[in-house]
Length: 193
Image (tube, rainbow, N blue to C red; front, side, top):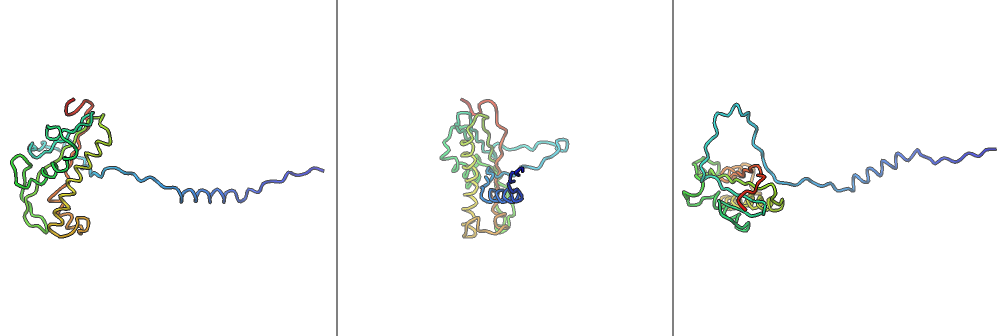
């Protein structure tokens, strides 16, 4: 008489595997992509561009970061600690200085006719710039614009920029636009050294 080897019941193995899969999907945390929020300009066919608009040099705030992570702002070595204040002064141009960006009159909802800056912040870094330095510079430039918006929101509406409705935020963004232009990194050392 031959004895049969008992089989391991496998009918519920698929159920167990499915339950384990669900368990791991529910308990696993997913990394959320983080980075810099930037809106890219819309692509334009080069054959449709008639001519490149001329940009007045006074309207461009030039920030360079070299491979040694040195900061060059408007052709002067600078410290990241005062970058935010310099960027705010540039974008605000409170006294309509000849050395800061031009302003143009614009009818802005909630504000009426306002003098709005034509200023653009230009950031360029070296390929060997540390990512941490690049992010720190980016953060300071974005923070400068955010602080200007926050100050104007509190002055005009008496509340934080984030607490304003969409139309009020849009009006403030018209006065203080986030115009940060990032030039393609250079392979050689930008800004000297």
